[in-house]
Image (cartoon, rainbow, N blue to C red):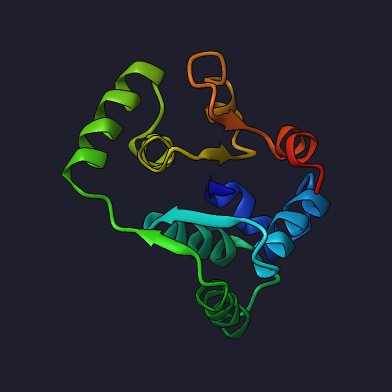
Length: 145
């Protein structure tokens, strides 16, 4: 199974402080490490996760470098959005009233014919219009991790 995940899930792989559903996020990560699922991300995922970790007071630069190394060792399928994905991102952003960044995750999920797993409340508000959007708990119930 192929999924797309956004930074709201990726941050939970490294930080549990003030985060909900960390256990479910870690189960998704573990399923990837066991090669039971494939995780695709747009390249901006790396920037967003690093930015979120940089904002956390208890994370040193060394820890953040290790987190980045871990993401690369996970062998995530990194998508560098092409013109079609960017065009779709613009359209999705307009339709959903989301930021370009959030809409990019949705466009990548569409392109990959994958579920988008997120804990981003603004993205989750668009589930009725985009059936491929799932929260961590919904994803958990679908595949019974």
